Image 1: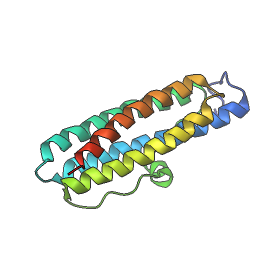
Image 2: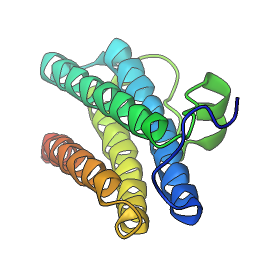
Image 3: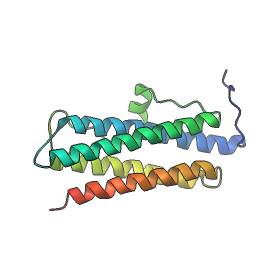
Image 4: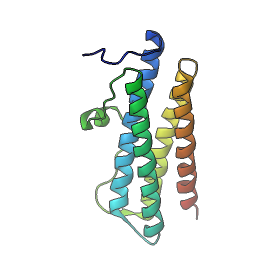
Length: 158
C-alpha cells in the first residue's frame, strides 16, 4: 500500500518536496496548538485583542496544515500529523504552563512565528526548482505568517 498514489515528480525531487511538506505540516500543527494554548491562558489589559488575534493564527495554521497535507497526499507522500510526530519534529518552543501575562504571550507568539517562518523560508528555497506548485504554497503561507508576526511584534512595542 506504500505506493497507493503515484507522484508526477521525479523521485529525487519528490524526496525534497515530501520532506519540506512534512516538516511544515509538523510546524503548522504545533503552531496552532501553541496559539490555542496561549489563547486559553492569556491574562492582562490587552487580553481581548490578543485573544482574538490568536484565533487568527490558529485559523491560518489549520488552513495551511490542511493545504500542506493535501499537497503531500496529491504527490503520493502520506502526511503524518500525529501528536508524537509533531512533538518529535517541531522547532517551536514550549509554552509556559498556567496563566500567561499578555506581554509574555505576545513574546511567545513572536518567537513561535519566527521559528515557523524561518523554516518555511528554508523549505521554500529547497522546493523552488523541484516543484513550483509547492513553492507557491510556501510563498502564500510565509506571507500570511509574516503578517501575523508583524502584528504581534507591533503589540510588543511600548
